[in-house]
Image 1 (cartoon, rainbow, N blue to C red):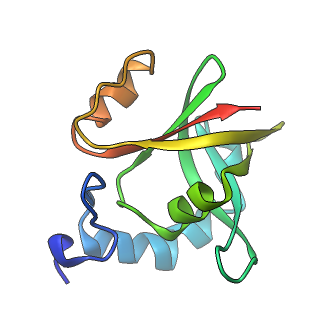
Image 2 (image 1 turned 90 degrees about the vertical axis):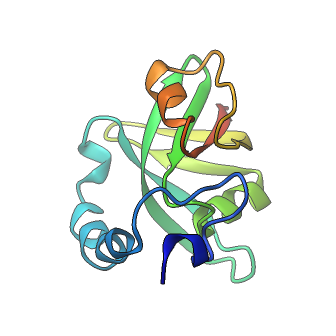
Length: 136
């Protein structure tokens, strides 16, 4: 399946990574990194609930913070965890030594102006969507 036909590739949410990389990441890399991800710099685990099942899921994400605003680049497009967080309006993010609660999640579509966000997020925002939320 090509990137343009992938279900995660939605308007404003371009899927930047190739499908083969996503498959390897989901099948092997995430399982290997999940126990140590929250200890890696800039990396955390976002805990969210399924929209229909209510089951709790943990997903590895790379975060960027500017004051009380947290940003996560969405290189894989509009994935299930993004839909879950947007539907719930909140989530918990675990780092090595602490946990933060995020609220008011919103998505900046690719090509948006990321004024006030870290420069690396603004750079990624040229090609991919970014989930932005407030830290409660």
